[in-house]
Length: 269
Ligand SMILES: [Mn+2]
Image (cartoon, rainbow, N blue to C red):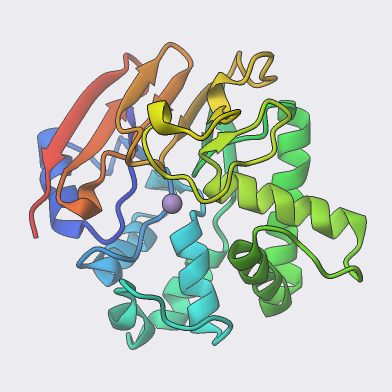
């Protein structure tokens, strides 16, 4: 019974298979935690989705910004973006099953002192607040369907929810989705510094990595996340950042949660 956390896949199916051989992944006994962004920009998103869906409860995965983009594309809510490699998924015979599976994923998974999220957390949020916001977003994904996805997509494009008609609860949930799936740096009050994706040392004035904000309320959890390839592999006692840019031709990384042992596989097409 071993659990590994794996970084952003983004269609890097063949690299993933090599990494799984390297860690001797045994689906009868082992579990994989995926930090989200299973799809897009890379070569084999369809293979990754089928593989993850077929592994059932051996996989614990959370939604990333590219996963939300795929769901929005599939519903015709957003245009194709430069660099999208989602056509194989969108044309697949089993696309509806795969997209239903993807859409059912949580935004946050919390277990035994670990917290799995795609990008990060607002420093002022307690675990109770995080659970409430994530469960609300997940319930809306199920019950409000494409209307909620459309609002997320609008929010992802503009950075701020501007429609005055939105309820306060909904605005709060949309902000939470944006934070869970997109944050890298923020001001000390938790306001994201949008538009910056470079390495931490180049962060704009007044901005720092969300996990370094003093007094962060999740400091006693071990947060496992990805999304920030310019940060790269970052392993601390209570922090595992795993996006090592496989999709850019670099490494795919996995960490064994029990002892923080790191495994890496360089990109193969
Ligand atoms: Mn991402």
